[in-house]
Amino acid sequence: MAPLIQDGIGATGVTSMQSAYHNSPSQFHIHSDGEIREKISDHRSEATEHPAHGTLEDAMEPIAIVGMSAKLPQSATSPEAFWKLLEEGRSAMTEVPSDRFNIDAFYHPNGDRLNTLNVRGGHFLQSDLAEFDAPFFSIPKTEAESLDPQQRGLLESTYHALENAGIPLKEAGGSKTGVFVGCFAKEYDTIFSRDTDLQPKYQASGTGSAMLANRLSWFYDLRGPSITLDTACSSSLNALHLACQSIRAKESTMAIVAGCNVILNPDTIMMSLSNLQFLSPDSLCYSFDHRANGYSRGEGFGVIVLKPLSQALSNNDTIRAVIRASSSNQDGRTPGITQPSGDAQALLIQETYEKAGLDLGTTRFFEAHGTGTQIGDTTEAAAIHSVFGKYRSPEEPLIVGAVKSNIGHLEGASGLASIIKTVLALEKGVIPPNTNFEKPNPRIPVHEWNIKASPTGSAPKAMTNKCAVSNRKYSMALKGSSKGICQLLWLRWS
Image 1 (cartoon, rainbow, N blue to C red):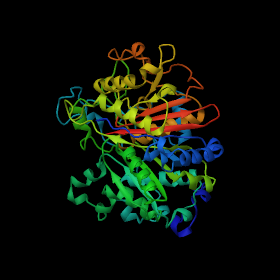
Image 2: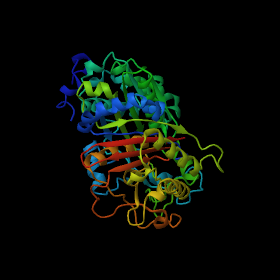
Image 3: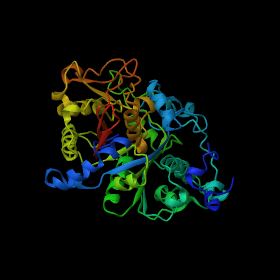
Image 4: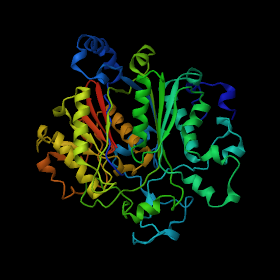
């Protein structure tokens, strides 16, 4: 296959060629394409006539999500396939693949035993990580061998996101497009560092974290900021927060926001997580369930494409979501550095709802962080109750979901996985069920708190009228209607 740069082919013309630790919120506000075009004049006039009634961010230009791609565990290889997995309530958990490492050599049921793992599985990509069309991306074979699979996956997923947005590569090339990537561990670099005889010529550019963003900027010829972030499980939503700020500050005319996570060996971080009792011995996230016993690691890539709303409208782009506001805070001093603050979570949810002008009483669905840890789930549920509980009732509880029950905790990519799930739910008008759920955690009095930890059976329709999404380090509130108009409010606490 000829290099894409050499051929100068646009993203829309090559379809046939390639077929948890803290709390930190940020906030989005989404509308559907058709309704936005009907209402945009009203929004602009309201902003002009009543500027004193909103915050600075309310008066700023909204930002449109115009494209997205997802390459997630097992069969969830695209947004459409991801939705199918969600709607059917399936789990993507498998035993550690043999091409990653020999789990039998490292497994021991005692999580306190050093240099071992007390888990046998996780949520892994189905595709072979060694497969990569280097010539297509203008990368010589010798350099491709040094390339972190995260760089490879980001190149491919960004291509598909631009294709989904209908943006030709020639149009993106040379533009002030910013690239913001969230990541977590450097597992490929660790492999080379064990033996200097294995270190390839291009290790520095092939495995450096900065190159996760820089490689995209280079290949797609993007001239805006190029930033890689590692803030653990809040990485990809921190990246999104910065992207929104960059667009509003006119640093970027468009932005690529991505999250990535790949698990390659047992000792880069997985053994430490196991020894700290962070991981579920069952390799499952029992989100808000009575069996909650830790989280399960997951792999994947998520990419979204952002534009200012006015530009997206003038270009007649498909608008999948609109970001209206974002904000951030931190736990501060808690009993332990990995323990969340429910007060910080609740305060940020309230502040971001006020910023976006959304009514807490109309929220029907909350996509939570929901790692399946005892302290994390109970703290998050208490924060959700403190904000929304008085607006709901036992007969009409707030439905709480968690995508980690399906695909595990994607760490550096977990925030975007939650966003993509919720955007899809709004588009479909369906709340997909959590999986791995039997009965509520006894520390979470769901009836008293007016929340329902998981819809069961067939996914209820017409329930996404008003929604919220949280990644514990992040949360979002969303609003929608049967006409398709929806609003997404993103919150982040770190």
